[in-house]
Length: 154
Image (cartoon, rainbow, N blue to C red; front, side):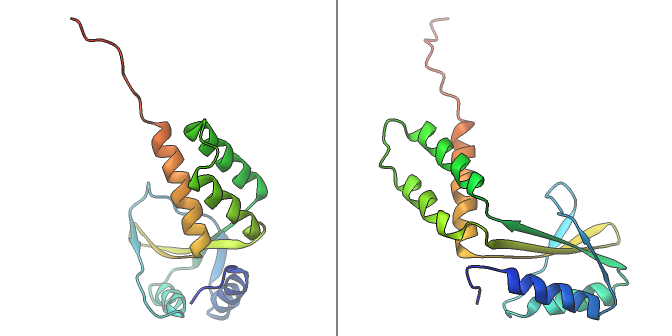
């Protein structure tokens, strides 16, 4: 369904939201608030989501996007190298370097609206963005591992 750049989908979403008389606010809804993720197999399911927002009486929806920056990949590669040193031939480094062809592209979109204290979310991502997130989680997760090799002679 997805191309490797969601910019035209973003433009369609902006027009559709406005066409339904809803306002749009730039903002990202994080995991710290109660949320319900809208699940739809239909590629145009986001339209149902916008119509649901309108039917619920939401005055606006939030919209967030992620555009891949070269600096994001540079930091990712640096973190991977720090964790796999001295093995510079790590497959994770190759995966991160392949992401360079997606610099400047939109890889993630989130629409959301609030209703009765809960945020309802619609999210869509490209395959390369999912790979980017998986690599980030890998280096973040490994960075938090503490090895205690002290002798416990107590």
